[in-house]
Structures are given as structure tokens and as C-alpha cells.
Length: 565
Image (cartoon, rainbow, N blue to C red; front, side, top):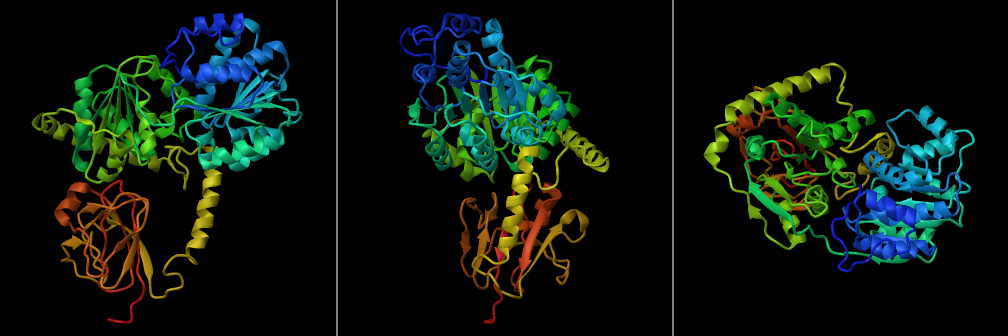
């Protein structure tokens, strides 16, 4: 199930004690739900009384049962077509919720339809025309059907559930959610479940819930006690070496490896396959059939390694995951909780290992601060790791060749221009509109708005192998790439970079003082790191190129033209 029984209540409370009817209690036993979880114990009685409920609980706490059982019981009492709607942020979560509805409602003939992007909209329209009892949908595709599918409306809907509401709103679905809510009757019952009470969630509940009762199981981010957590400091250029070493030690046990981007996920999956490891990738821009196929292979243990972006970090119920490896440290600390929550579920033990490079130290420290603990160092023998260097380098080379071939065939990775990782067709348009608006505003905002004499240029060193560091007007003898500040420059950091030998914070601007020099990167280091990107903006002769490490987003230097030279 999407939210499994991780922690049962301390008493012997049963589902029958909560007021759940006999048919559904039998269905719960069939699913192995022996006792209600904490969120189920608090939310189900309130929902059965007809209250609007706000449930705050972490992933794996049993939220599906908390809203599914009251919804089905109300449907049994008053059978009606198009009775309930469940909104979810992701397609995979939608299919998992449908599986639970099918299992719980099998004995009473409940029909449920999934309406998500990535699948044939015409076939979905045919299924909606049959007027099912329940609809599980992502907001974008549901809005399409409300606007375009003839005869389809939700004017008589009785129940609305928003699962993972914080994620729905964080994915810029606010406009779609507003459109959906305008199509629903005011006398409906509403249940809203979220990991946190964000400002957007609070605004939504104040506007659309009637006298809601808030149920909060845990307000503190924490991991389950049976989860063993480790970290390992590794050089950025040797990350793949350490990953392969750990996977070899793990053997045939099931592993989810989380990467930061779609590109990193696919490249690492290809590298693992070249080394003979059974790996399958999962990321946002895969077609729905391929995403479901990847999950099915992993669940069926046809593949022991799942390479995934954060699209798999929340909501997905993948049983028997033995290990979680954070190949890239998550930029948002709370995402760490969701990632490692894929293992040690339903009372089972699990292991989480986080690989931390020199460019991820600050982000990792935020995770330790959130957990209020220091993670144990994962034991490895460095000499054993370095033995793999030649084999892994060869596998990486073949993976890059395969990636190039995919690009030559027309970008069959499925990643649309301008798409962020985890975007699908429903969110890409919204993100592009926001980016376009921000780009238009960037010319008129900021501390140096209207300053003349500045120019910006983005270079890719692969196109200038003989002159990786020098500007066109400089000679080829430059041995380092650095920014030297003669006046004052503001550095806006989109990710992690290196300045004065320390990681720059990615959440706020960093001010370079006059005369301060960033850490230089030599040609030898460049040759080891291969094809990094260079982004620079020249306003004064003292401002030289800034070379960034791989996977670190470029940061821009806004430099005013100085008349005091």
C-alpha cells in the first residue's frame, strides 16, 4: 500500500473499534492491516462523523487507509456514481491509491478510474463516460477533461481528498486546483493530507474547508528507529567508484539510488549496465508506460537496483527495499527524510547511505541539523575502491557514448527544453511561464539594474579544448580560472560552488569583498573533471573566467562598470 503500517498504536484498538463496517474490516485483514496506525486512529472517527479533516503525517504513516476507509464507507451507505475524487501530485501515487481502492472495495463492487498525464486522453474519456464511483487524478489532466470531455462534470461530487497537498501546491498546481474547486459543489466533504502545514496549504484549507479538524501525528521530522543511517565523504571525481564498491558489497539485495537530475540518473544507469549490474532508471520525463514498467521490474525483483530522481522519494510503496543510497545529497533537507523513508518500512530494518562530496558539505550539514544527530561513517577500504578505477572509467566512457547517440537520434531521453527534473507535461508549461516572467524581470531588477558596460557570456570548454580558461583577448598562458574583485561584486548562487575555498550558500547572495579572490582551478584539475561549464560576466579587466565543477550550477557575477580605475 502507498502508506503502510509502520507504527501501530500502543493500545489494542481495532478498525471495528473506530466504527469501520464489517465488509471493510475484512478487506483490511486481507491486506494485512491488523491494527490502525496513529493517523488512522485519529482521522477515521472524525471523517466518519462527516467532519472536514486536515491530516498532518509523514510518508509511510498510513494516510491511504485514513482517507480511503471513510470514503468507501460513505459510498457504501449512499451509492452514487462520481462520488469521490482524490487528487495526487504524481502519476505513480495515483496508481497505487487505485490499487488500494480496488482491494478495499472489491467485495462491494466499487469502480475506480485513474486520470493522469502520459496516457491516452481519449481512452480516459471513454472510462469517465462510464461514470465510475471514484476518480484518482493529477490536477493538470483532470482540468483537461473538465474543459474538453463532453458531458463530464463533478457537480454532484460528495467527497474530495487531496493527498500530499504540500507537494501538489509546491509543483505550481495552484491554478489547476482553483479551477477544479470551482467545479465542485460546496456541500461536499473534504479531507486534506500533507506532510507539513505550509503557507499555501493553510491558505487552501481556510478558503475551501468548512470548520476543519486538524489531526497531527508528528510535527517533527524524524526517521524510523530500525533505519541505520550512514554517510561517507568522497571526492567528487570518485563518486561513481564508491557507488560501485558499495553496490558490489551489497550483492543482490534491493537498492534505490537517488540522483539529483534526470541526466545523472540515466548516465549512471547506463554505466551500471555496462558493468553488468541489473539497474533500471526512473525519472520524471519517462513515458507513463516506461515508468510503470520500471517500477514493475523492480518490485518483481527482475532488477535489483533502481536509479531514481526525487519523483520516487514520496508516496511510492515499494516493498522490501533493503538499501537507499543518496548518490547526490538532496538540496532540500526534508527530501532526505522522504528518500530514506523508502526503506525500513512496515517495521522492517533498512540501511541508508549518503555520499557527500566536497561541494555538498553545507547541504549535508543542514540534514544533520534537521535530524539533530551525527551520522555514522560508512566503513570502506580506500585501496579496495581505487582498484575499480580503470573498469569504472571505461564504463563511464561507454555510457557517455550511448548518451551522445541518444542525443543524435533526436533527444530520445524525453527531456523537453526548459524542463526541470521531475516535471511532466502538466507542470512544464507552468514552470516555463514562471521562468519567462522571471527572465523578463531580470533586466530591470537587482542591485545593478540599468548599469551599462557589463556583458555576459556562457562558454562550454568542450568547444575550446586548447583554451579552456582564457578569454579571447587574453593569452593562452593562463593557468587558473578565478574571479578577482577590484571593486564590489555580488555573487548569486543557484547551487553549490567554490569561493575562497569554501562552499557557497545556495539560499542567499554572497558578497565578495574588494580584493578577495576565489579559489583557482588549475588546468590539471580541469583535465580530470572533463567538460565542466564556464559562466562569466565581464565588466572590468580584473574579472577573469570562473570555472565550475561538474554538476554544480553556474553562479553569475553582477559587476558594475567602474570609473574609478
